[in-house]
Amino acid sequence: MRNVWRYELVSISDHKTLVIESWDGTTARSKWWVSDSGKWVPKAMAKTLVKLKEIVEK
Image (cartoon, rainbow, N blue to C red; front, side, top):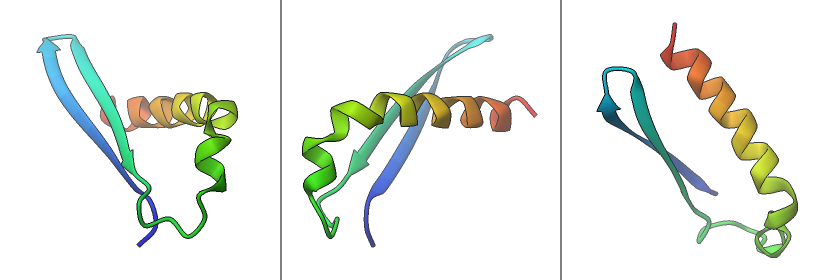
């Protein structure tokens, strides 16, 4: 197993959901990307949230 990504969905109201994204990279083979993550993580998270929104709104 490499990285474990989790998405917790918490209902706030009828039309709002809080999405909590977390990850555990302790089993990753390479740690270089953690120190460099500030450059790519925000963009990757935004893409993931768009995909997640598409899935839950089907």
